[in-house]
Length: 367
Ligand code: F6R
Ligand code: MG
Ligand code: MG
Image (cartoon, rainbow, N blue to C red):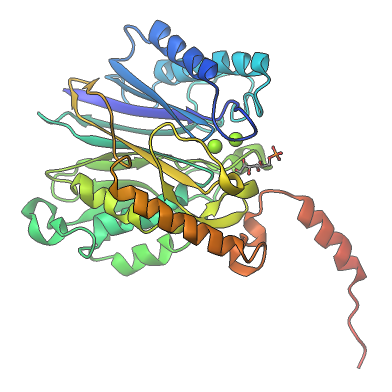
């Protein structure tokens, strides 16, 4: 059976700053999808990660479907009304356009989707990250799909032996989708050369070269490029099909033990380590640290099992402690050097105005 998995997420307001949505806001979004999704979608799962609410849906209508996108958009509109009533901070923050037009792409909410023929058993992972941007997944995806040091399946499993095709997007290009397709393992160094720059080049999707099937879909939107000014970080969602012709769940999860440094945290302007957290976790230290959650599912004819919280296992407590140590270490150097993002990535314009004023006061000494 052909199934489309769609996840659409947005920040439409939160308690205590940019920390977490209220229960009432979540309930409003849930009620809307339950009531209006009937006959349209086969199943859904709604969760929050930091201040973002994600709606995962299954249906048979393909990617970019107007009715499915509108269902999510309208749920966020209904939620925004409640967020305003409750005085939540940043109510409707990610809904950047006044009216819905065909598809939520380019309207603020992040989207990741894939259409595939459902396997007899179809395990998949849903990731959501907050206080960071889509490039945060570059390193974990590179390790999981291209490096046998992380993924022994690339060596051991015949179904993985041909490797994977990476579709990488240049997110600085705003006049349309600028993409390149590269194959692992042959193009490994080229893939590495692009993915090392996660603010510019972002993995959009990954495909099996054995079966041609899609393994990964990442939301690649950059709010900054849509709104033309800072409106929050892009807080990416991702869908990953696992096992059999794809890496195993454990091979996909393993890279998150690194706690690698990503762009984000306070004012979307710092380098901080990415902490794997439990489902429905809020944000705390230094408007961060950037967090990632993962719900694992099985699915049959588009119906989900209950989610399994992939980062709830005791193993990840030690990782979290380590990430907290890394975060504290980085914060000791405040805004200096690597702790803060380069000028081009700073999300607040105040410093640009400051620098422009200082520019006038510089003088070149006469010899
Ligand atoms: C980061 C983020 C927060 C805010 C910060 C200031 O993505 O959302 O760090 O940038 O809390 O928020 P404002 O400018 O809304 O007071
Ligand atoms: Mg926010
Ligand atoms: Mg957010």
